[in-house]
Amino acid sequence: MQKKFEERIKETLGGALIAGDLQSLQVNVGYRCNMACRHCHVVAGPDRSEIMSKDTVDQVLTVLKKYDIRMLDITGGAPELNPNFTYFITEAKKAGCHIVARSNLTVFFEKGYEYLPEFYSEHNIEITASLPYYLDSSVDRVRGVGTFGKSIKALQLLNALGYGSGSGIRRLNLVYNPSGTFLAPSQKCLEEEYRRQLGMHYNILFDRLFVFSNMPVGRFKDHLKKTGSLEKYLETLEDSFNPSTLDSLMCRHLISVGWDGALYDCDFNQVLSLHMHDCYPQQIRDFDIKRLSERQIRAGDHCYGCTAGQGST
Image (cartoon, rainbow, N blue to C red; front, side):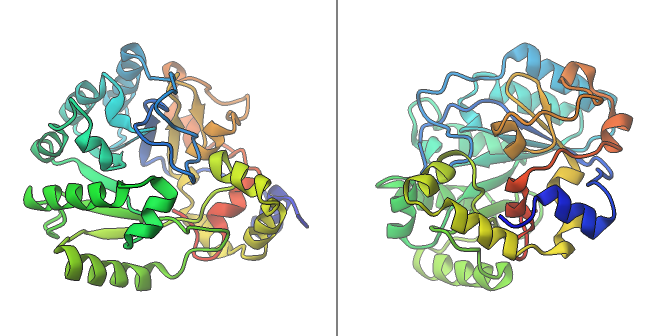
């Protein structure tokens, strides 16, 4: 790596990376998951025991009710595996929040979770679902054999409930991740191809495709190390630094809340245990929207992943 990310930011902005208006809370309710995907940055899996307690969920709800934060972004693991998941959503809706749930889709077919599509539909939850590609072999290689088939069936179930129709009421987003050590292609072009392929072969509709680069953390970082390609990938990200991505970086407009209530600048910092700078609130119980909206963001070299090419927002 030729230049530290913080040095690049100082050169580009004339100072540190500072937060802007706080639009959402991204809450990780636990690392437990029914899958163990190769690219997972939180290293989620069936054996993870980290789960957000009801007390911490209630602290998050208190913040949502006290401040004008209209977006709640719930993630995991598979967030649905948290025993307080439906309670969390029901109470957050009462607080007037727009809720986004990040789902792996396959959890719909786990015993005891078959209710999820109808539950999401009933509460008009926006779903952002992982579908790394529109070909079965590519998806199964990264996420496990049979994953693509289950994902397709889940998307068809959601479509039947009104998701992906373009009405704006039940929004269905898909997420693409590259299958290797290369940057994602144009989001616009890839979204068009997803629509064509999924529509033609499976009659599936969706609202939007999000294109993210693989972050050099978690299982993907372990894979890079094992294959001796970590340094090369970091150089690719650094060489592709795009200053036009800085205004819309997600860390400037959200707070990440860990399963234990700890506050972070983003979900990736959470995984790396990079807490906010000491001068800012560290726990959800100490939440202060004014101070957090003006905070200096704690950055690291992994942040090149969000500023490479078209960026990840």
